[in-house]
Structure formats: structure tokens, C-alpha cells
Length: 378
Image 1 (cartoon, rainbow, N blue to C red):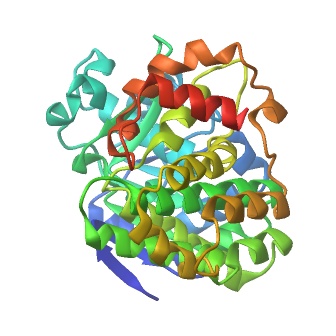
Image 2: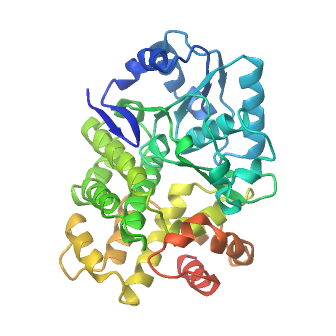
């Protein structure tokens, strides 16, 4: 069973969840709080994790919302303290993993919580959190090996918390836990991973190793067709393996930074009335962001390397290829199809412009550029 040490330790393969007791023992974790969501419980995945743990969990919090929130962090942190927990296990998608990171921060740092957000310069204030084992059940966010967590605050902002101290102590990537994931969710989470790889690859900061990892993730998910295979057949274990690997690679790549797709996605995802899925938003916005890059004649050398990784001809439009891909895997083409309208623009703009992801975009992205991207995507 492969064990990779890159940013953190990752045990990766079918059946890797069985390694959980040994990993907890190695970390000195005797009373972990399991952070998950109601969907994971209903799907029976929680029962699989509980059986694999040998009864290790001191308590279970299954109230993780679609987009993790400060109130949910508070609630889970209260359970952590009541149960006398000393560690965390996150089981689920990016929301559960980000919420667990928030809980770890909450129980070890003095408030106010928002002072630790990246936009406030809080990264330097974040110290160690309790041992955290992250177990993804989707192939999308890569939060199991990332330095960040995204949480909607009481003040309405969707804040990013960034620190090497938020990287889980160990990731357990077991593709079998994602077998049977519904096609729509497989598509949305898969495009989240592809957006991570593509935005990190095209981003302005200089980091060739991260770009190489992102490019391989794109080759795996799109060029080799594993994303389409995973969507078409939820029981295809090879497809699940490769998509979980691509998700892992996307998170390793975005240590470099992301871009305007994520800036706008975060700004819209914070709107509680819409309840939008992050991966779906990324997929809808991505082709329009790419078109803005192509039309400006930017990143030509990088695009030339991206095309063969995607299995495209030398002169193909990357933006059009992504638009065709999301249509084939059943993701809506427009923001208007998921409930967004032009009235949401003014509320989204200031959050998008100030979002941490914006700073790494391929070219300078301000209010005018976000207005254009929003209207193209609408």
C-alpha cells in the first residue's frame, strides 16, 4: 500500500481505511472526535469508518453543513471539549475536513476566530492544532493535504485560513469510500479537482514543481478520461483511484495559489440563500476564466503544454474543451441555472476582489474583470 510523504503523510489505496487504528496510535490519539455530515451517515460510510476504527471515536459530530460555518465550528468544538477529545478525524468531503481544521483551531487558540483568517494576516498567528487524520470520501477538494480551510464566518464573509499547521497529520485516501458516489456529485467534485490543477498551473506565482504536479493531475483526470469514466460508472474502482489521486495532486499544486475562478466561487458560495456546491461553481466559471486568458493572448507557453495533457490538438481552445467536458458530465453551463442572477453581482464583487485566491490569478484581476467574468458565466 503506497505511503507518500509530501507536505504530510498520505496512505493511499483501496482499503486504506483499515490503517486508521495504527495511524491514531502512532499519533498518540486516544479520544478522537469524528467530524462528518449527515449524508455520510445515511450512506453507511460512517459505519464503515466506525468498524475500521475499532471503537476509537470518543464522539461523532455529523452536523457539517454544505459550506462549513462558524456556528458549526463552535458546535463541534463544544462537543470536542464535552467528550474530552484529544484529536480529530475528518470523514467526508472538503466541508468536513475544513470544519475539522476549524475545530482544531478553535479549541487551541483564543478568539476572536476571524483574526486568524488569511485576509487579516492571521496565518502567522496559527500555531499547532490537535492531531488530525483526514479521510476523504470524494475526489475533489484535496483538503486532506492542503494548508487551508474555508469557512463562512458570522459576519457573512467566506474566509480562508492558511497555515502549514492546518495540514492534517495524516491523510487516508481510500478510493473505495468514493465508490457509488452519485454521478452529479462525482462530476462536481471531479471538476473541483481539475480546477485546482488548472488554476494552480496557470497562476502567476513561480513554482515549477507545483505546476508539474497540477499538469499530471489534468492529464490523469481529463487527458486519460478517468473523470468521465468515474461519472459514467460509479463502481469503476480504477476510475475512483485515479480521480482521488488527481484530487490529491490538485491540493499539492495549489500550495502555489489559485485564481479568479475560486475568488468568484468563494464569493457566491458564501450566500446562504443559494446553497451552492463549490465544485459546481468552479466548473461553471472555469471555461469563462480560461476564455479571458486566451482572448488576451496570455500564458501561451503554459497553454501549449496544457493542451496535450488534456488530449487536445495543438491549436484547440482550452476554454471550449472544458465547456464541452462539463456538458458531457452533466454540470450546468450557466450560473443562472443554479439560481444566481444579476442582483447577486454587487454583493459578490467586494468579496471576490479581496479573496486570497485572486492574488495568484494569471493576470491582475480587479472589479472590472470580475464583473466581466460574472456576466460571462451568468
